[in-house]
Image 1 (cartoon, rainbow, N blue to C red):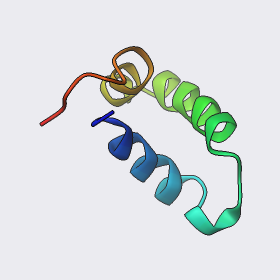
Image 2 (image 1 turned 180 degrees about the vertical axis):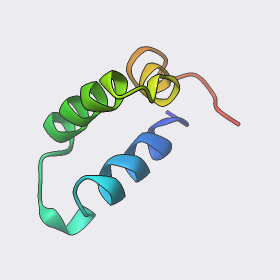
Image 3 (image 1 turned 90 degrees about the horizontal axis):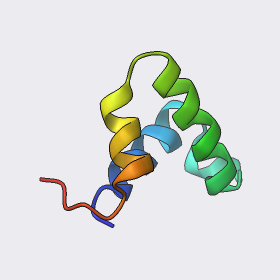
Length: 56
């Protein structure tokens, strides 16, 4: 899952720090929807619908 690091970087450092101890899957889904609604659709689509696609 090459694209996952991008998503995790966004979620970990813009929403919750890695040390917050949140459960990644739940946090990521909620923040992915928020990001999608707010217009950052490219990252969200890549993470949500093409998680295994190789990203350069």
